[in-house]
Length: 140
Image (cartoon, rainbow, N blue to C red; front, side):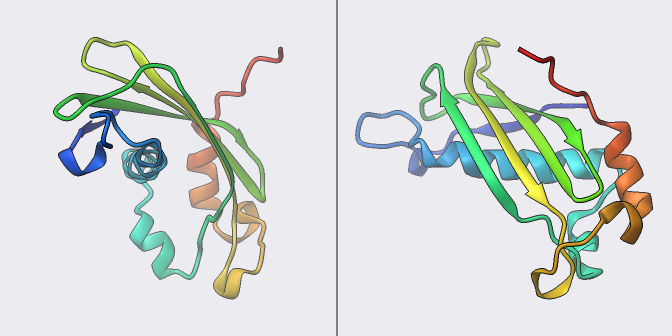
């Protein structure tokens, strides 16, 4: 998989000249959609069939600041794929390959009107693609 590339824009920075913390969550979403496309799942097609994967939990740990003009590389890894849930991890590195941010997100699978579903049963072709990408976290 290729990391999603993001060039830091001026509007993403704060008064201190560093990327405002909220933008990393946006970058996770940008990278997540890019990652899905790379594994052969079009998010717009997914939604056009009435499916969604709302975020139910998200975390972000900041390591090094990024600034206007920096290039960020966001790597996405599926750490857990079940019939009803998807867990992802994110690593944001700068152009010097230094880790700037680490994150995770958890998603459930829903159909129209937000009703939880078994994605494995409802859309097995998508679920199988997700499952083949799973790289479980090592236990502490």
